[in-house]
Amino acid sequence: MDRLAPPFQTDMVCEWLIVRTRMIAQAESMAMVFKDFLDVSGARASFEAGAQAWDDYVRTPHGKLRQDLILYHLLRHLGSTRPLRVLDAGAGTGAYSWALAQVGHHVTLVDYSSPMLEIARQRFEQSGQLYGRAEFLHAPVDELSERLPHRRCDLLLVHTLLEYLPEPEHSLEQLVAMTTPGALVSLVLVNPHSDVMRLGARQHDPERALGILQGAVAKTRLFGKGRCLIGLDRARRALHQAGVDIVAHHGIRIFADDYTPQQLANGETYAVLRKLEIAAGQTDPFRQVGRYHHLLGVVAAHPSSHP
Image (cartoon, rainbow, N blue to C red):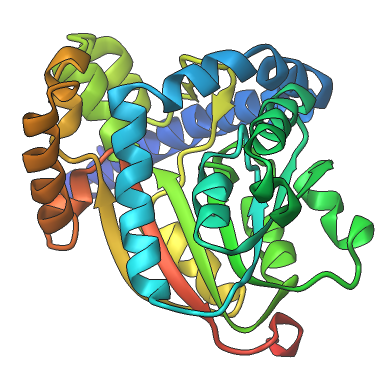
C-alpha cells in the first residue's frame, strides 16, 4: 500500500500544477500574438484601413491632450537647440513630426501604411515652408538600416510602435543604431495596467480585464490588431540593452480618460487638467497608472560598441 505524501510535498505538487497551467495559458496567448504579428499583409491592411480613423482620433480632445503632454516633456528636455535631424519611426499621420518641424527641426517620417503617410504628406505640402523640412519613407522600420544605411538622427521618436512589432527589443536596437552619440530617444508605450483598469473600471467588463491580467491578447479598437503588452521594466531593459541611458519617465493621461470629450473640449477644464497631468505625470504613484508610459533617454555611445 502506497504511503501518503507528506503535506509539504502535496503543496509543492499543487504549486507546480498551478505554475504549469499558467505557463501553458501564457504560451497559448503568445502563440496567438505571434500568429497575428506574422500576418504582415493583414497587419498592413489594418493600419491602412484605419488611417483616417487614426487621424480623426489624434484630433479629438483625448488625442490632442496625449500629443500635448508628450510634446511638452519632449520639448522641455530638448530646450533651445539647433535644428535637429529627427527620425519618426512609425510616424502615422505625422502629428509629432509636424509639431517638431514647426519649431525648425528636419523630420523624416517612416511608416509602412501608405495612406497614413499620404495624409501626413498632404498636410506638409499644404503648409508650404514646412514641406521643405520633411522627408517621407514608406517602409517597415526593420528595413530602415538597409534603406537608409548612412542616415543618422539626433532625435529618435518611437511612439506606440514597439507593441505592434514581433521582436520589439531587436527593432529598438536597430533604430537606436541610426542615432548619433548623445541623441535623445523618446519612447512611448501603452501602459499594460491601464488596459486592465480601462476594461474593469470604465467599460465594466471584468471578464476581459481578467483575461488581460492573465496574459490574454490586447487588441486595439481602431485597428483590431493584437498588441504586445510591454511593461515598464521590460521597456527599461530594452533601452539599456540598446545603449540608451534613461533620463526621465512620465505618465501620460492619468486622469483624462475619466472625462468625456465634451468635458475636455471646455478650454478652462482642459487647461487646468493639463497642468494636473504634467505635475502628477512626473511623480509616483501617479505616473505608474497613466494610459501611456513616456521614457526619454540619451544614447550614451554608439550602439555597436555595446556587447
